[in-house]
Amino acid sequence: MENNHWWNNSVVYQIYPKSFQDTNHDGVGDLRGIIEHLDYLKKLGVDIIWLNPIYESPQVDNGYDISNYKAINPTLGNMDDFQELIDGIHERGMKLVMDLVVNHTSDQHHWFQESRKGKDNPYRDYYIWRDGKDGQEPNNWGSYFSGAAWKYDQQSGQYYLHLFAPQQPDLNWENPKVRHTVYDMMNWWAAKGVDGFRMDVINLISKPAGLPDAPQSGDEKYGNVEPLVSNGPRIHEFLQEMNKNVMSKHKMVTVGETPGATPDDAKKYANLDNSELNMVFQFEHMGLDSNPNPALGKWFDQKASLKDLRANLTKWQEKLYGIAWNSLYWNNHDQPRVVSRFGNDQTEDYRVKSAKMLATMMHMMQGTPYIYEGEEIGMTNAYFPKLEDYVDLESINAYHQLVDDQHLLDGKTMMKYIALHSRDNARTPMQWDDSEYAGFSDHLPWEKVNPNYKQINVKKALADQNSVFYYYQKLIELRHTLPVITNGKYALVPGNEDDDAIFAYTRQSDETTLLVILNYTDQVVERHYDVPTKAKLLISNYADDQGNTIRPYEAKVYQF
Image (cartoon, rainbow, N blue to C red; front, side, top):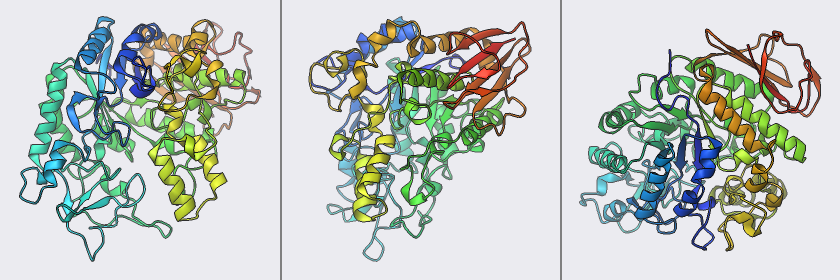
């Protein structure tokens, strides 16, 4: 099936506004900071800019707790700045995607403030309220951010559900008023020129009838809520209704963040008939380096094996082909830096080589690639040594839960795990140059700057034709000019399934074959692939081609 939508061969660049560029000297990034760098993004070649939430918010969870969906957070700017930003994006032939957070609101939102006033309030049913059970919470659900997923509200005498922080009460999607108010808000932004939405934890909005207890293991104080709340009973009905009321009226692109989704789920959410969403973010490859002890979740220090990674990426490529659309990503505001996590940031040469190798692996697959701010210059994890260095609520809560409360880990081990996996790794300020605070601000930033900014920054990358930046630029250019990258069929090279070092796959259309060869290790290995003598070396992260000798983190793509 040919993929002819405008977003099929597009590349998305994700901006975390607080960390991108500060222009009003308060240490926090802002909308004018994004406006300043639109030419930089145009030079990179991206088509779509996705912004993390810029709405009014008390910032308990970095803007994912929204108190007003139709207002800009004053720290970031105002509606005039927003209009200038969207106009500037459109003038350069790019599109804007907003973050849509409608599983929950802030407890400061007008709806919740009203809802708390009592059972007779017209907004009461906008949220999920329940009586307690035997002096306890209504059920055993655990929050994604540790602790119970219920909070008792003294004012109104009941518990409300919050799958995330207590300041993020869940909306009641069973209430048609809630749904249609959300659709009206989405259309309001579309009228301002917004080109699409990335939908935060969208597959959690349909809760199971009766809210039964969640599965619980011996070590856990609360039940694991994900299997119950992800892909709930009415989710497809809700998304089709949203599509009918919003997406079908505009030439939009939509991506749903869907924790716990399988390829079979994705086929429903992101079917090529476009009746729901255009694509989903799935997390299977992000869980490959999790701790084998489920009570410790993602906190661990082992790198994902190539065998697991290849099997997982291959499964998604094969299962969605011709049925649904993939989104391709290594990084976002919730994940560690790709080069530190799947590559090697221990030496400068390995950092550059492995960053390019991982970029090749993802950008040669079928789907829409997402580049997270700083990924295009090979930014690394920050590896902060002390708990006080961290801002991320999830990391701090996890430390107290696993070390202080449950004694499952000692402090030193947990700090090592946090240094590798904290969300703060992605949120350190963008490294523009080698001046103080990395050119992000002239004021102490809200989050510490990664100490390596003098070596790794945009100014340096733009001055070096062999930098990670220009390699990404070339990958994007190839996607725009070679239809095989958008439409070709993916296949593993026969015999590659169990290789511990090399990932080799092809993309094939009627006219063209691409052969992608990637070394996931720091070893030199010998492998023979049948490369026709007339094959063209399309892109590579080494200056020469040594044929069967494949060097550390080498990536090469042949076209024939």
